[in-house]
Length: 256
Picture (cartoon, rainbow, N blue to C red):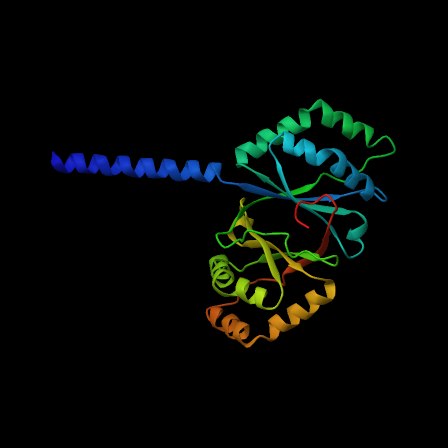
């Protein structure tokens, strides 16, 4: 009888713990990386709409604007806006987008801002993400007039994402700072298959020239060379070269 009671209590504890973990996961902050592609000549219109209306409407509906950037290199510098917004949870994101799209003020702004033609060439690309446990608290304290940001996307070989995370956590982010590469944020996509093999992050450089010098110094760092070699004795982490997009923050971006 005592054994049965102990087993019952144990099962209850497991169920409560599972419920807690599921609730915590559902309620954790969720980030959304969105890429907007405009029709020719419409990027300024899109920026004006975000600056004057959309950011405020996002806030109204519970969406926090983290940052807005325009790529620095052609051709995407002429027609692309990249932003990151934060939601209280995935369910909150769904509710916020539904309320935003149904808002009469937004519908009026969307219509009036496009009387001279459609702004977007296609629907925005969206990736939902969660912050890694080593993603830092970013501050704007060190911004400069030439500041550039770099969005980097790493895609791993099967089973190697935890190894890549461990290397960033234990070594890479510290070595970045040593060479003037400022860590902004690190995320994993939340949806499969990308959740199993992809790391998305943003770093900051004082200028494009500074970025070039920093990456050269980082690549030549003897500590990094040792870490890179020892961490991949059982196989390479990345299945392809990292994707890199240099960006400048817009004048209405929270992160600048």
